[in-house]
Image (cartoon, rainbow, N blue to C red):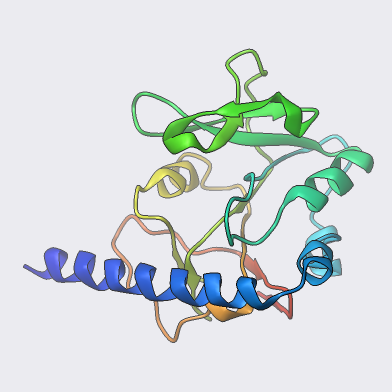
Amino acid sequence: MFLSGLKKTKKKLREEYRRRRDSFVGQLDGASRNLSFRRPPSPLSRLFQQGQTVALYRSIGSEAPTERLIEYLTEIGINIALPRVIDDGSLEFRLISSLELLESGFRNIPEPGETCELSDPDLIIAPLVAFDRSMRRLGQGGGYYDRSFAKYADVPRIGLAWSVQEADEIPVEPHDLPLHMIVTECEIIE
């Protein structure tokens, strides 16, 4: 009974925070949206080291944009790995040198093809639907990133989000791991 109620609560939160995010992004002009998240703030920049692999996501819809960040990190010598959903319901991360290497994958989300090299990330930057000040993350609901966080438990977990995605409290289940940092267009939460 408790788990069923928790799942319903999470579902309602996802609906509410997707609406908030869509509304917020819909009010931004193109220039403001493109400038957001273009360069990592100093606390995040200090985590990057040349030659390391950073797992990122290719933003879709109103998610915090990653295209410019991917370009910037590539320019400074960071290897970029994007997620690919595999048959067992988990993610694998594959290196890309260009967003043109992406193909339509799971749920028509752009992801690297099978010819892209597999890689273990040194840092994971994950999308989210909502977050709270306790570093809890509400994802899309499939558990893909939760499983990746567990697999790479010692790898720093960073959430990228718009400030309107902040909730008072995100309910958690035993498998939910907290983030180490959350970056919004307004602040860094550590």
